[in-house]
Length: 142
Image (cartoon, rainbow, N blue to C red; front, side, top):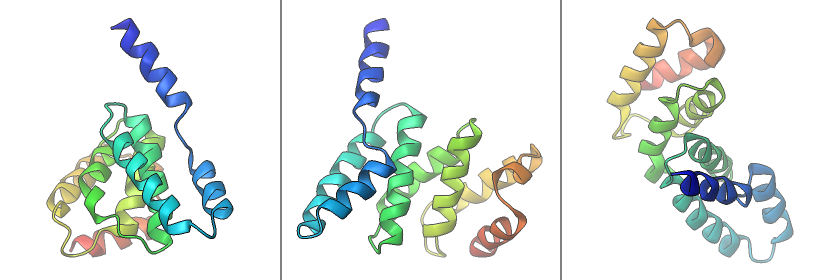
């Protein structure tokens, strides 16, 4: 158990952050598509880990890639997992990703509705996002 924890901490040390991803994209202008494809594979490996911190970091990078025009709909369930986190910082990343990439035909929309309802009942909605973002997300669901 302790060895597994040490190993996961070492793995986390070498994970790329959002800043590293942006820096890498800027440095690989001539091979941008190939670089992003390799980063997407790394992100998929990060999403398979148990740590919600690692998953939130991966979702953060996916949101950036989505803003660049790449499709991240394959990670919708992982976004839900991060939204369900108990930590505020991770939960906020999940809500941002949901607001950015979920649409009417997203297959996990019912789970999103239930999570929002649960968070609203817990009175954490004013911590997660401002009212405007919350209304946009609710409009997408309805």
